[in-house]
Length: 325
Image (cartoon, helix red, strand yellow):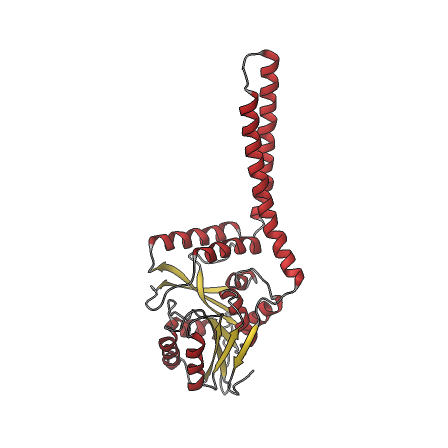
């Protein structure tokens, strides 16, 4: 792999922050200050753009975002979505409005350290188009760690072999990758994993994810389960293949069971109770059929959702330096 040094002499480079916000009204006054202070860690020839997306919040998130915009109208863009569409679709909306030479996705609650971004940006200046900060550890409960570690382990083993262990939320990427993801306009997917799916070589920086200090997380168990299903359906054929394998195994079991029944009838060595054995077979086969239909339904539903061509998000209003976009 050949690296090149990005020449920035007399050229202003723009770094776009894409920050989805959902019930982050308490976080934003602190987050906005941290973002501005963090600019001092960069060289003077870097300009900044903050694309803040309100993902249908019902608290004072939009009001706090407007305060941030009022202070820095030349660098803050606001996008208010009509309803809650999930963090990944909110990130996609931010990608549509970002204009930077490189981009970084950052959580509004500051659980991912912004001070890592200058180091990530340095790698981009060397020609690395994708820089990932992966979670080596988490300051969270045992249950949260268990779910997260299991999810990312299965994704790495069964879907995307090239993702870093522990998963990631903080990622910096070139505008070329942003354009490719926007063009795909995929629904029901994991935008972060879509960046690694593109196949570009990346640099990995491990870190410990912080405990959330302000506000309450809206990352519910239902949303986690949906993300789990979406990720597997979007990036893996394993569920479909598993149905085929289980079907073959059940067919073999049925064949050998039929041989046993026939042998027992002919020889009278074994007395087989018809009702119990029949019900057992019916329950096993019916359960598998329902499971198989459910898996197939997940794939078919996502195909239908794509064919409909409904937008993954609807923008209610926006703000930029001219107060509108």
